[in-house]
Image (cartoon, rainbow, N blue to C red; front, side, top):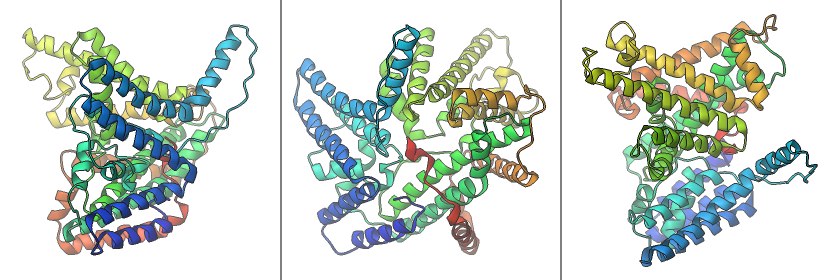
Amino acid sequence: MVFNSFTFVIFFAVMLALHNAPLPWKVKKINLLLGSYLFYALWNPPFILLLWLSTVVDFYMARLIADEHRPARRKALLAVSLVLNLGMLSYFKYGGFLLENFTVLLDSLGIAFQAAKPDIILPVGISFYTFVTLSYTLDVYRRKFAPEPSLLNFALFVTYFPHLVAGPIVRPEDLIPQFKTPHRATADQLRWGLLLLSLGLFMKVTIADGLLADTADLIFSLPFPVQPLDAWTGVLAFSGQIFCDFAGYSTCAIGVSLCLGFVLPDNFRYPYAAIGFRDFWRRWHITLSTWLRDYLYIPLGGNRHGAFRTYINLMITMLLGGLWHGASWNFVVWGGLHGLFLCVERLIEQAGLRRAEAGEWAESKPLVSRASVVGLPGNQAVRRFGLALLTLFLVNITWVFFRAPTFDGAMLLMLCMFGAIPDAPVMLTTTAILTVGLVTVGLITCHWLLRDSSLVQLARRLPGWVLSLAWAALLILVILTQKGSGSFIYFQF
């Protein structure tokens, strides 16, 4: 079941009716839990067993960890949770990938080995709910969060359907306290929740699928080179598609949850207006980037053990973040490029700090503008916008490896983008190129104008009739373009 389906409309209407019925709070939570299991089961019912196993094991392991005071026993109990969760994730998501690379390694050593191809189905959302349960167990282990005494509250925290299959990746403090007391959407929450749901569907159905998907799919599926303009158009189409698809899902999830009276954390904050890669990861898939920071980068040592270790920790974090997205070397390269850009950015900033401290610059505020580090001419706004465009340019380079089906395909497209292959054919029509161009300019403009603002706060300032007309236009466009809509991209992760 997906947000952009008629099945979900019926399901959501039933859930809203049950949640607003005059029933005890515990019964309403049971309804939400059963509804969440149904939401997941409509994809593949047997995989609910994995969800139950992860839920039950982490619930009881956390309680045992909290009651245990011997360090060795606490670590052993934590290991049980880690082995179970990461073991399931590794088998279902990386089993085939590991076997394939093991076979290649043996072949390179001259050892003939032909393994049977594993028939493994990737459970939808396993990457997301694994991180949700891990955050709970790790927080209890670090005594940051007390174990939840109610299995119902914990199970609902793990399986709550708006975030279950594609995030946002919630922490215990995000949802569990909300389940302890009766929650019901106010009229204002219901209105804004429905507006966010409409906006998310518009981003997914109308922009991602209706305007951009065909161009991106065509260019990335071609086995032969194309003209640079076509190559860049395909990459920009995917850049806009993946943002509108994934941010559209998160916006739908937040809106659906708000209609029920629960608040989910933001997952996107205008990332295509980011100034630098550190800023980008503060704006793109925020719940994943903060999860990697808090549960991987900081435990590795963060920036507390010198510059060299900091760069190593950054690279490890981003390489594993890339691998989290999928079992492919392309995702490893994608994560590695982001790690490399983060390291280079940090090197430049540190060099700028040293020069400023030595009195070589008139500007002594090191991080007011990264533009001062690279010495771009012009005023502050122009420098910042230039750096935002540079960041977006490099982000689009990384998207090539994220989207291309093979590494060779990614390299071929990269060569096309920079005109290294002469006499390549033209594949895209003028209409397709103009459409992608207009959407790209529109996205960049919106992100730049709203980068430090709240969309809801901005909408509240609009006259009611303007907001109503905009909302009606969103719904009409969603309905007109619904037939071309498909599943959300991040379901595959």
